[in-house]
Amino acid sequence: MGVVFRQSIKTTAITLVGAVLGAVLLLVASQVMPKQELGFSRNLTNQTVVASFFMLVGMANTLFLYFHRYDGDAQKDRRAVFMSVCFGTPLLVFVLAMIPYFLFQDYFIQRFFQVQDRAFMRQYALCFPLYTLFYLYTSLLEHYLLTQIKSAAASFVREVLIKALNLSLVLLFGFNVISYSIFIYAFVFTNLVAVLILLLLARKNDTFQFSTQWHLLSRAEYKELFTFSGYHALMSVSFTLFGFLDAILLASLGHDGLHAVPVYTNAVFISGVMSIPYRAMSGIASADISKAYALGQHAQVRDTYTRAGTNILVATLFMAVLIASNLHNAVAIMPPGYEAVFAITLIMMIGKFVDSGTGLNDVALNMSPYYRLNFYFSIALVAFMLIMFRLLIPAYGIYGAAWVFTAALVIYNLLKTYFVWRRMRLQPFSAGSLRTLFIGAATAALVWLVPTLSNPYWDTLLRSSLIFIIFAGLVLWLRPSADISHYINNTLKKKKLF
Image (cartoon, rainbow, N blue to C red):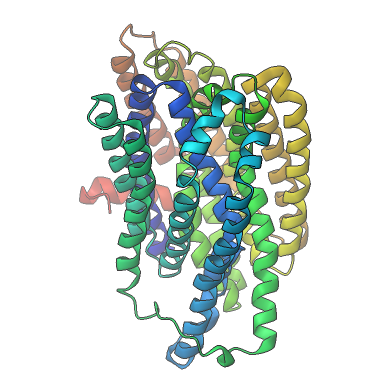
């Protein structure tokens, strides 16, 4: 697991840098941008991500999970056709989807947005299709680079470069250098920059080739590919809705409309920082597991699955303690009107912890003959969320949305984990899992005893330093993860992170 773990550490480090940039972006945007304008930009992002997963029709997952079936020079031409199918199908779907979007645009705006927000939606209606197209191909190129075990480069573009560009735009708007119209269009086109850079990175690989010799794949192969992608399309959409449906529906069901979105999405961002290790480690570990499964190396699958689960739990719990211990400081530096971020973040962290702590259950189901079950689980949970959002958002606003989100995430992951264990005999827990929970509880308790400093920045620095020292020391002592202990020892010995 050496290469996989090193790539995971690199990707995690890059993503953490991106999280710092994202935190600065969140704080600055909250300070300089009115809630309605900020709410529109964030709602645009949420809608775009959901729409792009509809239009990907599962091809990103198909690219990732089927790519290694076409390994080797003998499969070169067939692989090029496979690449054309994966990259071409979403473009066709996008073109077809834009027809009803432009024909019924006014109906959608009238039906799904509050009166005070409709002018924004009409004025910037072109932003949605552009952003969606750029995001769609960013996702495809990232999945291709994952198959080449090059997640760190893709993460740098998404987590660091794009956020740095967006922060620059927010500062320019804050200093009245650019208008909101210029800001929002430039914000959309930063994603085109991401596409171009990822395209240059992808073209450095010999396997990044395309062909229209459609006859090289059999009818049975096309049927298998499209059946697989069809189920994963619906599954991906429903899973994406987990993360974005609440914020999107707040704008239409909540009495405050777009004004409520910045408060809620600030909490989404902070709680999402806890999932950084999961996103970074799961991507590269998934590539290794998928390749081993395709080659029939089931012992390797089991070993990587359990070790990755333990590594993710250790890193996730560290982030959870770090966030919870400093949450009061995060709220203190936000402008008035954002006080609810504290409680909303804690509610969401429950769901995020269960999601990350239950390991790579999605990967296990997706690569197995049981992948349809993941779809059924996710569809049922989205239906549950839609009903509960409809009931609780009008009554309880952002608090109702947060509790529905967490409940759905907990139920979804417990169902998947149980099924993977019963049917595939894979589970992410080990003897180190209990030791990890003890380490997290002990660290949180010790830091809680530290008096709070009046300056939130100094208090954050003090608490974060103590958490790092205590947590790392306990990990070295109790050794919940052999990979992480080995990495820490190597880093201390060689004075090098990678």
